[in-house]
Image (cartoon, rainbow, N blue to C red; front, top):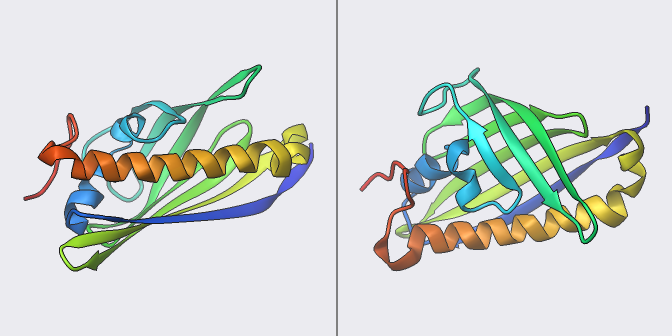
Length: 164
């Protein structure tokens, strides 16, 4: 099987919410489906997740003629509340690391999401043309959704833990 190259995509957005509130929400993979277009569902062993905890997520990516759905297994590798959170994941198509940084800016948070991934098998040949553009657009949409969710009309996201 062919191994693809490692790709890193960085997105950031300023959110009008304190770092702890943003951290508490985005470090809940069972809520990712509320803001990330590719996340379908996740099963967690506990809340909050701690370093070493493992969980599974169903990811669905829709292309014009086909939908690709895969289960991804993750392990939490870093968890420093309101500062940094990271998971490493593996599916039949990808190895990936999702790294979140939270920086206080005034009363808000500069949220940075760094996704590093490697595509396996034949799909690796199509990564620059099919995979990367889709992930870029979904990542941008995810952060815009996250901002709306955390700032929207003073409503807290459903089933989330938000610190005052």
